Length: 158
Image (cartoon, rainbow, N blue to C red):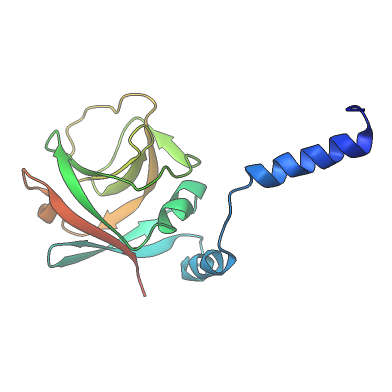
């Protein structure tokens, strides 16, 4: 009797539980404690011997990205405006989506799945599906303005 209400409810609950991603409660609490009062989170971006401070936005995408930290990526150059690196897994796409960017932004490109940091503005728009803004790096981004690949480490600020 597939139409029996108790059976339908049990199946719905099982599907709901199976579709919910497993999360480490302790790491979620640690992430929450590290967010600033306004919901944003401070991280460090290490490029060679330079350490820059960045702020992640209060969004599902940024929180999911922060769960990957610490993360070291070899970031390649694209169009002389950004460095991008391939993430170990896709992250949430829920956040501020845009087809334009600002210098210093850390963004998620879901088709990759890649993360990128913009270091130069060239006035070009981003093709669909656009980018999801994760946060912004403060300070001098000259360490990224090289023609080749660079190793970049993202980590939570203590």
